[in-house]
Image 1 (cartoon, rainbow, N blue to C red):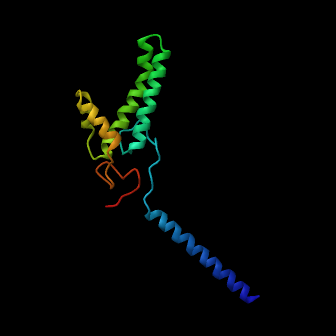
Image 2: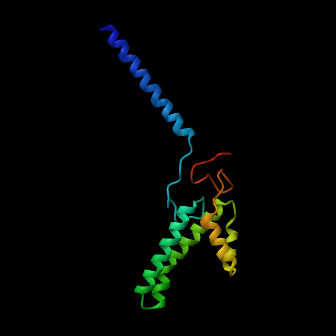
Length: 142
């Protein structure tokens, strides 16, 4: 009977040690940022996938809203949140590449805007924590 009690105590200590080491591993391991966690905030960073999905869905929603609206006034009111959403997502994508939101002005220059959008869609951001926050992919290799 006494050996069973000792075995139970040993197993209990072993389980507690495993749980503690798992919690420590989770704390030291960087985590991925959830997608679309703060869609209307200019703070933080987002990756290429979230930016590409944002661009695609806002384009589709703009087409649908534009097709349903009979007046430009109604279209302007309904498309304003989409424009604000894309503005904030683009800011965060520039932040991922350690660039300030001032680079949004490059989107106003013909032909350079195409290059800037392509860079935002296809170039990888910083793989470490930069001036604008932690890596959204959780890599933090530096």
